[in-house]
Structures are given as structure tokens and as C-alpha cells.
Image (cartoon, rainbow, N blue to C red):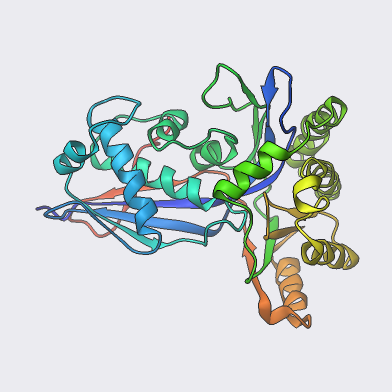
Length: 345
């Protein structure tokens, strides 16, 4: 065996809200989100006598690897004959670091995409577009923000999925100014909806009004995205809060309001009372985000959050924006890992 190693470092995803739910029109869901460098995740692939997966969330990583190997080893976008494919590709996949599942950071999608990209590099496959990687590991069936964010980073908009589409197309992307910072705060004892509970919640949601979906579309494309592109911090912050409040109303029947319960609503209100305008909830929560103009102001908010009476119960992170997507590195004997050519071209 050689000393070859593949390393994938992926960002985390913030989802600012969906345009619609159970919409009877030509497109469903849609939404806006952004990628951040922290907490992020990292996996490695190394030579081994047999296929094995180590580290946290190893069962999920193993399933994603089997799906990706079956699809990529045969050159197909669908996944069959898993046992044969895995026997052909012995390697050790290790999850080095990863945030928890179901806290609003898109961890499941980022892990699946990272494993698929790592397997593709391990098999020396040509550049693979993100929608194909997502199909390999069965992601992106409702929201596509995480899969495009994995590939490209930045602030992302997708207008929703037509009935005949497996994955919604990416409609707009801009970079977020590098100096800006998101502060992420979540109560450690809470988790967002997932699995069957999430499916039932979506099924029970009333259709979002057409007027709200159109307002959200205009807010994103005519206000939020231009403000980010032109580095207008205050305008972007105000748009971010307005968008999240309106998008959260689509889910009020499931979570009791625009935020997932009174604790998160109170946390958002407290941060807003500190004079910070760009505040919201990512996905189902329980992570709340606040946008700050720079590292110093972000660190100051962290100190204030931790000084609260409930500060010790909060997980707080300063997250720089990620404008490049995941990074795939391939090394042989040289321990100095150089980035591989863009795997998503």
C-alpha cells in the first residue's frame, strides 16, 4: 500500500428560510442560505486492507461511502450492488471532526457530500458536479442550499424544485464580505426536528401564501443579495432579519411562531436588544445566528452571551463566511497536502 491520503474539509450551512411550503405552484420550497467555516467538518481517506469507517457518525459516513462507491465505481449516478462495489474499493475513512446532527448546520448533507467527494478523489474520477454527487448519496431532495454551498460556498438562492426535477437548480450566488462574522449560539440540550418527525411536520404545514413567497423572493434578490455584493452591512443585516421572520412564519404551525419555541425567540430578542440587527434561526434550530461586522465585535458578543445567566448552557461559535466551498486535498508521500484541482468544475 502507498502513503496516499485524501482529505476533505467542508463548511457548515446556515439556512435562512424557505420561500414556500406545500406550495401548489410550479416550484416547491426554494430558499436562501450561506456557508460558514466554523464549526465545519473534516474527513480523511487512507489505504487499508479492507473497507472501514472510523470516528463520530461513522454509520452515516459508511452508508454515504457505500452509496458513492457503488455509483462512482460503475460510472453511474444511481446506486446498486453495494457489496461488490465496496469490496473493490478498500480504504479507511475517518471522520476527524464534525458538528452534531440536527442543530441547523446541515451536518448530514455536508458529511454525505464530503464522503462522496472524497471517494471520487480516491477513485481518481474527473471533476463531478455537485448535483451528481448529491444524487449519489441521496441528498438535496427538498433543499439544495447545502449541496451547492458544499461546492461553491457563499450566499446562495434557489427558487425551488419543479415536479420533474430531482434537485432544484441554483439561481443566484454572491460572496459574503470576508471581514463579516456570524456568531452561532445554541442551547446544548435542544435539537431540531429530523427524520419522521420532520417529514410529518412538513406534511402537516399549510400551504404558504403566494404573496409571502413572492415577497421573500423579492427580499432576497432585490435587497439581501445586492447588499452582500456591495458590502452594505446594515442593509444586509436588516434584510436578513426581515427574511427570517417572514420565512419562519411558514413554519409557525409546527414550531409555534417564527422561531422554534420560547427559548430561541427570547434569545433572538436579547441579541437584538444588544443593538445587533442581523439575527435569526437557521433551519429548524436550535442554532441562532447573529451577524457582526468584524472579528472584534463578534468576540464581544460571545463574551456577553457567555456572561448571561444561561451562558454555560450555550454552545457559542464565531464563524467566518466561507466563499470557496469544500476543499479536497490529495497527497502521496509528501505530508504537505496540496489542494486538488476544483472537484466541482
